[in-house]
Image 1: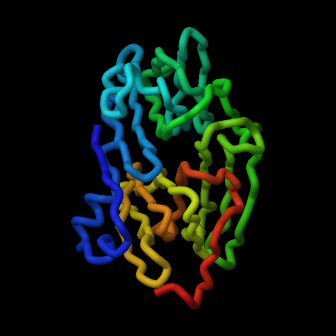
Image 2: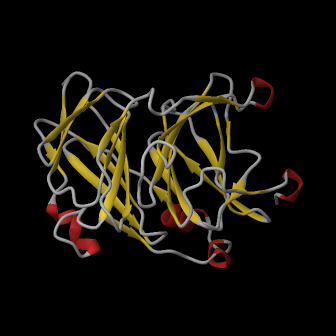
Length: 278
């Protein structure tokens, strides 16, 4: 497990390229047969890459050590989206089977969790987020239909996309976790522009379905002092509450967004006028 400490925006504005990447970019998320986690000090969110190999892959009790618990979800909730082949998730004896682009939410207190590939020729990969919880909410699978796909944007502004809301108050109760997926249409490259901030919560962005030589130029920082990070396929960016989170790719792509903080209202945004960006 990697640990990322929170920093003030004035410190971020003094960082060079490598230090920005060290603080905010999460790479090497997937290795077959491993659970790879990064604990951030922004709302204590953890971002996790899960890549089952041969046989079941468990959330090891060791994952609870950095947060001072006997197992990872003793005082945490958890949401994951499958971006690979079909996978079987067994949580405290209850089995869920997830197809591509389906998700699962596990409530606080879930103790024994395993992930197992259902098709060895198409291994699964799951991007997950976990954050502190104060009460147990029911675990459940979330299908594409449950996520209520919502088309947005247009080709004229290069941001035609579909938004899937998997974990949010309109569908199910959670303590603070909100999670979804956005898929851009061919020919569109921009996400979250015009941009915004929301000081009530942090966010993490996981970019995928980029070609091997493709990239997203992820914009971050205060609106009046923006910085950028080059993001490759299946990498994530940690976005502090004081930062915008926007990007443009060299081709269409998809990304999973996960939020944690004091407000779960999706539309709670402090919008930034295009002319105010620097």
